[in-house]
Image 1 (tube, one colour):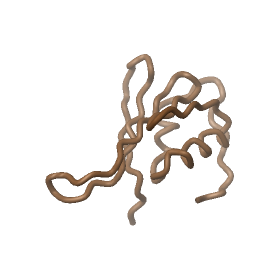
Image 2 (tube, helix red, strand yellow):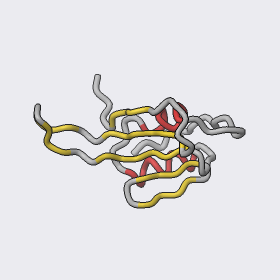
Image 3 (tube, helix red, strand yellow):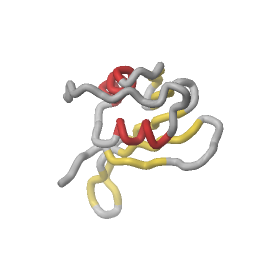
Length: 95
């Protein structure tokens, strides 16, 4: 787990893009929650979803076997009010 210092996000409004950038590459939901909290946001964790500031949901889709082999976990990040964009980011960092 990374212990890097995280730059504080815009405190006025949380965006789906900000959340997507922070959870990308994280495959453990508890760690993602900690990262978002360290960024200064209020977060709530329920099952496989994290609500950020009551405005954004980060939904962790677990890994599974797909048509073309194993699929890594993915995050689907969307605004609670349904506005676009919706971000889909992977839980693995590949070089």
